[in-house]
Amino acid sequence: MQKTIGLVVGISLVLLLGVVYVLSNNQKQVAQEDVKQLTVETHDFQKVLAYENDYMGNNSNITNLFNNLPFSNYRDLVELDSDTRTFVVNYNTSGDEKTVIYNATAAFVLIKNLEVINMRFSHQSYVITRENVEQWFEDDYASLIDPKVFKEKVQNPLLESTMTDWINQYTK
Image (cartoon, rainbow, N blue to C red; front, side, top):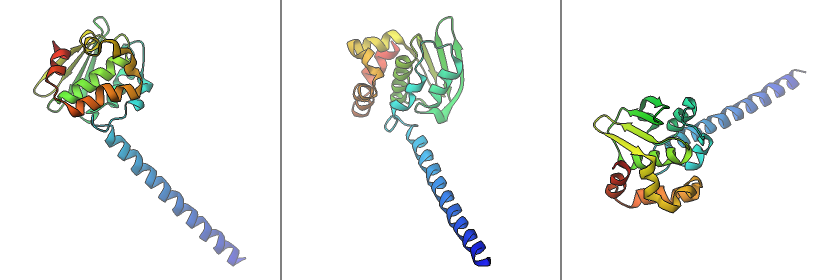
């Protein structure tokens, strides 16, 4: 009888240690995945498709979108103006043009009636309009909802070229 209890306790401990090990590894993977979402270079656009919405007035949806885009670790207060369809996002860091372009493009592609984004950084602000973004992509704009196209037309070019023309078009 005592051998049986000892065997059950031993098996239970081995199983418990196995579960703790698996959960620990899963948490590490989740943490690594979260870190990958913080930069333009490693962000996975597929992961933000859940925030596609016809209306920017859904405060929790648009806020959660920006919580899952690059630089979300620097995101501060946000403001919505439904009358002008403007979203203002404040960051507590210096601006990064790649991130501005990436996040603005993602937001306009996913939030259908969003018209203006004002990204405020510690030393600079960028005001981007949907019209300017659509003009940059011309006929390709509608296809950007596809993660493969987004990577090909937005993410990869941002990693390979200078931003001067791009940011000038977005903020004109």
